Figure 1 (tube, helix red, strand yellow):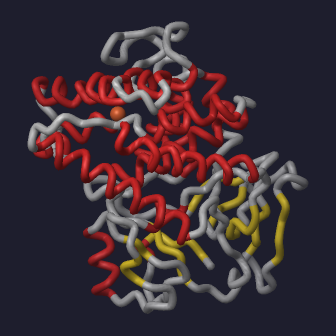
Figure 2 (spheres, rainbow, N blue to C red):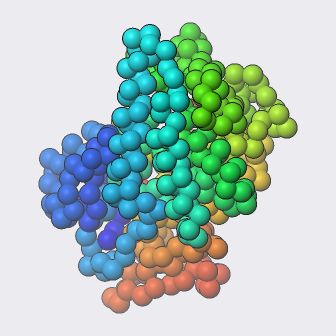
Length: 359
Ligand SMILES: [Fe+2]
């Protein structure tokens, strides 16, 4: 299968992977023909890439950490619990996080099991194949990415558990922020920005008061918007003062946000998301953690069309966990496609990727 920008689909292509709505439910099934009308509707919803069936790459399948069933089950649990908390907050009911902690704990243990057994780089396909990403999806993704980075740092199982819960609940305070401010797509004014910032303190207090959630997970919610140069919020902590878990989550948070579809802007490809992290190294993020993160996530997703430095064109066929910037590329220039392993052909690099025409 081939990963194609929606606006470059010229003929009636067939979907090779389903498309999901905001809640993670299948909206368009595998095999469906992408008519002009369907393509328009997907564009309106912020989708920029789709997987289409393609003869030359029929044997290529993208790999993901969770099966669609596991993913959907976790997403539904997060959604049910978050919605319940949000409804209670809207009516002024006091939140007792102890009621929810066993559900959240189960999800983190489920992800942890998968991450511990996985030796491949992480690719979050749902970011490409979903509509405008929700807080449920984002929370799950940040937990997965944080745990994968935590594993690279060789944190022990208990530390990973604290980190995973902190990551899953990093934005829980947002459930108490008025929806009109939270969902605003235009620029926020100074007052609105101050309201948004409160989600860190709100989340900290919600988790801190709960006896069945680790205190360090509460600090993750408190500190995930701090920046290493001291210009973050709410307390302007500097590099040495920010907890390691919060530094990890801040990287996972930004990477997931910029590589997810949004109605008001296109999703960045993973390599662009990583460039953005590098531009914030030593300012926003811890540089060593950013470097380690580039070895944690898939840089070029399977199926993506790439241009090589010697002028050849190909499709990413396989990624190497030990050298993610140098995947195997199926070269399609010429009459017979063949696979070129960039981890062995060191004179050739990826010079450009297939991009949507409109940003
Ligand atoms: Fe946040």
